[in-house]
Amino acid sequence: MDLALKPEHKAFADEVRAFARDNLSPATREKTFSGKHYDRDDHVVWQQALGRKGWLPYTWPKKHGGPGFDVTQRFLFENVLAEEGAPRIIPFGVKMVGPVIYTFGDDAQRERFLPGIRSSEVQWCQGYSEPGAGSDLASLRTRAVREGDHYIVNGQKTWTSFAHWADWIFCLVRTDTDAKPQEGISFLLIDMKTPGVTVRPIIMLDGAHHVNDVFFDNVKVPVANRIGKENEGWTCAKFLLANERLGIAEVPASKRGVRSLRELNDDPSLIEKIADVDLQVQALEMSELRALSTMALGGAPGPEVSTLKVRGSEIQQRIAELAMEAVGEYAAPYQPGMLFHDTNETPVGPDHAPPAAPRYFNMRKTTIYGGSTEVQKNIVSKMVLGL
Image 1: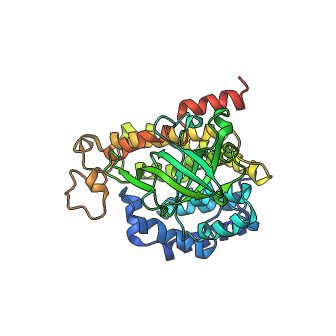
Image 2 (image 1 turned 90 degrees about the horizontal axis):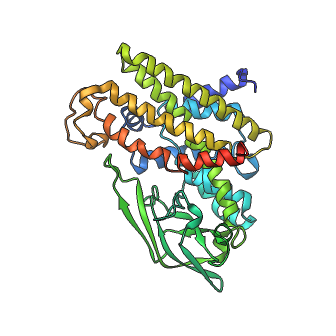
């Protein structure tokens, strides 16, 4: 794995930086560096700018409308945008369902769905977790019964991020109750405007409305919206989860978090702790680059990306813990309202103090979503170590 930058890669990094400075609004950049919540336009306006440039589907091959970045370009793209304060690209369209559609879908489905994902004109959310079926995803109970050229869907999904912003949801549904759990699941694309779809907000400890319950009450979905064969949706699910877990490592964001800790801290007692987490981030980055190099040679994300998910989640939590420690007693006044751009609250302590506690509590979720740490360790022990 050659990490030396070629002149063309340095020029590419300069191009990405110039693009971010020309197209990323100062208000959105300020939210990034102050730890405040984004609103829908922060994400969509930025993603549509990337779409017009042809960079939004930056992980896609050229034959499906992506820019065809090599490993180094992908690495630089993610890191430069993080340095410039760009919000994270919402992954559900570009990094999750898009690759599923171009890998397992037919030509008509690719032609219908991929353009809206590439441009960010169509927003997506993920219908996987259910009450009682999160880490044990194969026990899901949302039911899809075929009636002619449609399915009738009934059930509930939960912890559905950005469902209140989404135009479409990709769902795992049970189409065969008699088969083994993984063998009776299908992968459906459902228009959120379909009668019978209801979204109910879930407000998190940091005051944000990011996640939701989604209910399906006799929702009519065309069979043409099924990706892959009936009862073979688990294949799509595993493929999608591997891509999701690679993204959850969030190395560029963690590097930005370490820089913020250094800039806001002159406490000698924290210097060693910050240096330790910095080394952990660098080690994780090398592991991620190895995974990307394998993909560049024609491979796909395998079970080893579970290690990236585990370590990436733990590092994000550790950075949040150190931020709490750094602000000391100013973390005690719990002010989640300070994370909103239009707040009327007055911060207690320095400006960087109020986000520390809400972010700490919110980051407890990172070792659960996308597959809990315990499940990931089981995958590694079985699929990687062969134990």
